[in-house]
Amino acid sequence: MSQEDRSVGWGALMLLVGVAFLLVAAELLPVPDDPANAPRAVLAMAGLVFAAGGVALILPPGSRARLAMVAILVSGFAVLGAWVALTGSAETIEGGLFFLSRETNALLGRILFGLGSLISAVILIVVLRQFRR
Image (tube, rainbow, N blue to C red; front, side):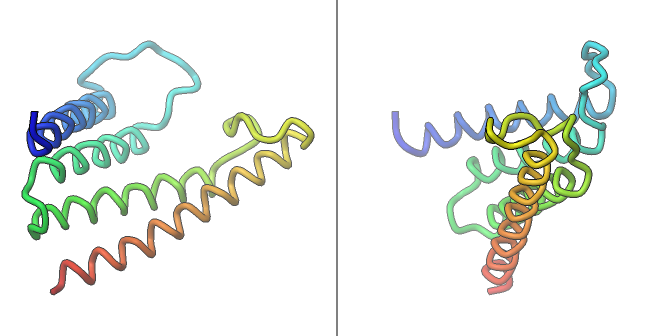
């Protein structure tokens, strides 16, 4: 199997996952009721990220359409990271360092997601500059 065939296969899989997320966000695909479910806007953004990544893998390397899909993907990362950074709480951010309090771990999580969002925004600027050429 060639590299191009693998890219198309992974791209198709990512596109299907993205469509599934979008269907759940639009409430067209049922999921169990769970108070921990993410808001529909977050699910929709995650669906767009997966779908854009999948389409980017299917498109030819170096094409403007592929760069547009990468721009959508990276902007989705920035939005999702910012959402967690701004709305994350000790109850929603799990994990962290065992020797820190839950609140300190939540703050650390918000800071790290915020940094990830800023890095994604910088990458988006680079992609958009490349797109303009």
